[in-house]
Length: 145
Image (cartoon, rainbow, N blue to C red; front, side):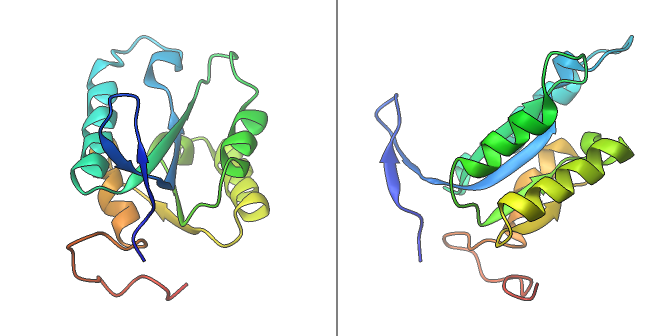
């Protein structure tokens, strides 16, 4: 069944969010590094959801102490029913954070498929393995959890 359509602030019809992406905000990860390439890849991933008319929300948390990560992630998970939650690679490289996020997903979105991306710009493909994408044949993963 296709996702309900909602009107965005720009007046364009957009699908209601069905996918939650949990990742790190590259601008709030400490260290001497350039967050711009990762931020651009996240935006490219966001655009892929738009291109395929699959509603997605991104919950990007900081590791700089500016977020109470469990509270932020829990609020995002409880905001609606999610068909799929994608957990980004940055989260997965922080073992304590990864365990915490997986357990929060299990607790607050027990019916959601959990997917993992390889890079920020392939986040849509990770979700598409688990949710119906308009105009795309099934990959066989959906419903086999």
